[in-house]
Length: 58
Image 1 (cartoon, rainbow, N blue to C red):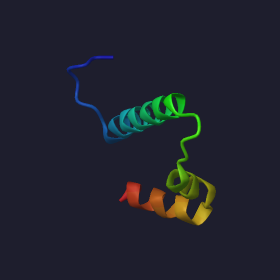
Image 2: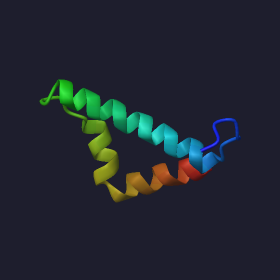
Image 3: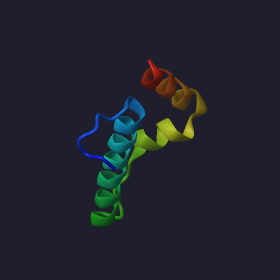
Image 4: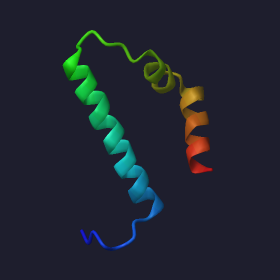
């Protein structure tokens, strides 16, 4: 990958998602009893997930 080349929006989004996933994985590893209720609610509820997807697309 050419680090000097500009990144497209999907590439930037993908990197941001990876950063968030890495942070959540680290938090979960540090405290196995930690709950991510809001995140679970977004992922578990298809209507909420769809709304989030629409916002990201916009």
